[in-house]
Length: 148
Image (cartoon, rainbow, N blue to C red; front, side, top):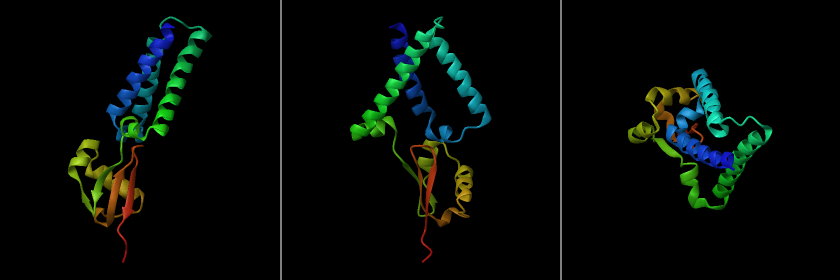
C-alpha cells in the first residue's frame, strides 16, 4: 500500500511540475532535456519504490501511475471545465502580423523562436501571419493572411 500512496504523490508532483515547466519546453526536447528526463525517471523510481525491487512493487508503481493517467484523461474528456486546468488553453501569440508581447513573454517564446517556427511552415515574415497560436501541446499553429 505504501507504493500506491507514493505513486499518487509522485504522479501529482510530476503533473504539476510539467504544467509549471511550460508547453514550449516540452514541445522541443533537446539532447540535454532527454538526459534530464532519464535522470528524473530514475530519481522518481527510487523515491517511488525505495528498496522494493520486486515485480509486485514494480507492477504496483507502474499500475498506479497508469490508472491515474487514465483517470485524468477520463476527467478531461467528461468534464470540460477541467480541461483548462489539466491541459491548459491555447494562447494567441500573433494577431494580424503583430506579436503579442505579453503572451510571448508568458509562454517564454522569443521573436527569434517565433520567426524560426514560421520559416518551418514557409512563412517568410511575421506580417504574413493572421494568427499564430501556441497550442496546448507546445506547438505553434499559423494561419496566413489571405492573398486577396
